[in-house]
Image (tube, rainbow, N blue to C red; front, side, top):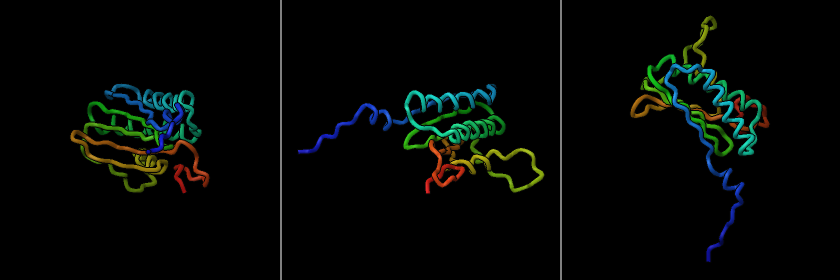
Length: 157
């Protein structure tokens, strides 16, 4: 006879991903995407009871801003911002209409701007870009809680 394992409502809630998606047509201010990301992360904390460090809250806003800015600047047409929390991380995904993969610009101390990918790669646990049937998707993850070793990307040791 198989053992039956009962889960509490809390365990069922925490085991499910928490998801938000926002379609952007390119005319909305980037600040709206940042506000939506902050609101989502605040709900993750207040409604779902998951811990979210101040660093994670700030990094999510920063990375959303950088990725949506890149989509607006380099891809005509709509983009899609998706946020998903599961397994102690928030996954940020931005899809746009251009299949050309982004590249980090070469180091140049005199360059102003074009640091978005460098920033995202520095503060995220993971960074992935892949072509889609239409366009491309940039996907990153950020830890919800701070790394005990103090790593700014919240990486686990």
